[in-house]
Image (cartoon, rainbow, N blue to C red; front, side, top):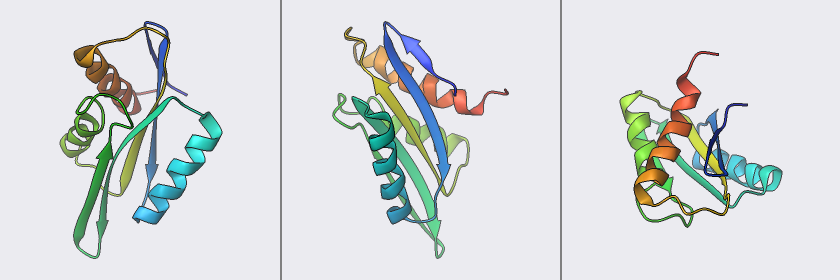
Length: 115
């Protein structure tokens, strides 16, 4: 599993295929139970019956530092019927908004690197 570590905080990206909001909610709950993270931010895009359903969350991180930047990455990558979660284990050191935003996007980008 790929992960990014910055100032003792660990960021773990996970991408799953989804076809409904209910499926997204189930996966999110399963990940919360499995990983017990401090934060689990996400962004998703679902195409259902010709309509686009989307959403994102910063999960109590400062507004705008995680969900929306990951959603924008998904748009650039032309992803549909996918959800990207980034799990964060807080390392005790505040990163600041700019570094936090970069960390979440860099972690999500790990999903697109070759093995």
